[in-house]
Amino acid sequence: MREHRREFRIFSRSSLFDSAAIREQAERMAAQGWLVEGISGFSWRYRRIEPRPLHFSVVYLAGYTAYDPDNDAEKQDFLEYCSQDGWRLAAWWKSMHLFYNESPAPVPIETDPLTQYRCVRNALLWGVILPEAYVLFASFSSRRFRRTLTLTPAQHLADPSFFWLVIWIFCSILLLADLFSAFAWIYRAGKAARQGIFLERKTSRLGKLAFCFCYAILFFLVAVYLTAALGLAGTAVLSGGLLLIILFLSFWQGRMRKAGVSCWQNLGRSFGLGLLLILLLFGMIIPAIL
Amino acid sequence: MPREKFQTLTEQMFYILLCLRQECCGIDMLEQIPAMTGGRVHVGSGTLYNLLEQFVSAGFIRETKVEGRRRSYLLTERGEEVLRQEYERLRAQVRDYERGLDFTPDRAVNAGASAGNSASWKPCCEN
Image 1 (tube, helix red, strand yellow):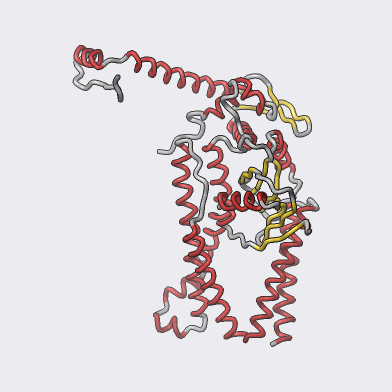
Image 2 (tube, chains in turn purple, yellow):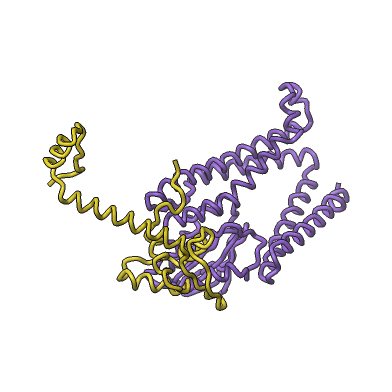
């Protein structure tokens, strides 16, 4: 009987804050005899346990990224506090930390709705709102965007980069929808917190379907463009190569986190290695195939 | 207009500051607060950790001792003042509640008439 299993799940920036879904998934798997022991952007890793009901709690620690070491001193202090009430850290990814407790009626980790709301709001601000707002601002203030505003529809259609404009508009719509959803939660949850209620962030089934549909269309558009530009073989090599690079970097970052390498060192090394691999892919492998 | 942070204290904040009128280790408060309130109030470990950090930043408490992972804190003068203001606010609420128990509509009308005030305050419910 295998002792470990891995489940592939894609974590978007926003789904990281769907604490209800994360908690329910962990509780469901624990009842089936699998305790989550690692989470990354692509997968959940489990280890076998005696099937039993466990209490899970999702806590957000603002400022933590995928590059921060596992043995961070401030985090260890926080874990020490949580362990006093029987809460153990099961897994974490960026600011999201998943705790479990074997006690039948444990004292919750968060008991003050206002403090809990502020923690999640800060994590949302640093993890979703600021990065996505920056990307939107950078793209809208770029010279390329300003140039598109001066073109007529006929000129747009004649422009070879029109297809990328369509993709860019689609990406902008997704980012704006994400930002709107984040601000809507901040507003509603802020009001509820001041009345003593913590509003857990939940993505509706319709919302998840809509996002999946949009990402599928985006993927299709990019695939069509690349196939037209590079051919089927070139597209397959490019997609496969990028996927392998992303998986390898994710594995590499995880190893450096476990080794206690500092955040900036991890980020620097990952960036350098990533750049090298991309140059290798675009500079040697793809030209060789084409 | 949004309320200023710590303008009024939640129950958790109040009891943490009350505990820190004497030097106390952060972790020990997890047991001290339920003992102080007869089991009525429990502060979550995450909430306690976050509030201690916020109180240190706001100048309400200061760190007095660090022994490994055990940090001790003590209320500052500013923290005493905030705690005293919250205590006064709660006392005022208690007084309003007790006044509300003694209140009858006739008294309000008479009090309003004698003061030359046509508006009279009425309780939200009457027995």
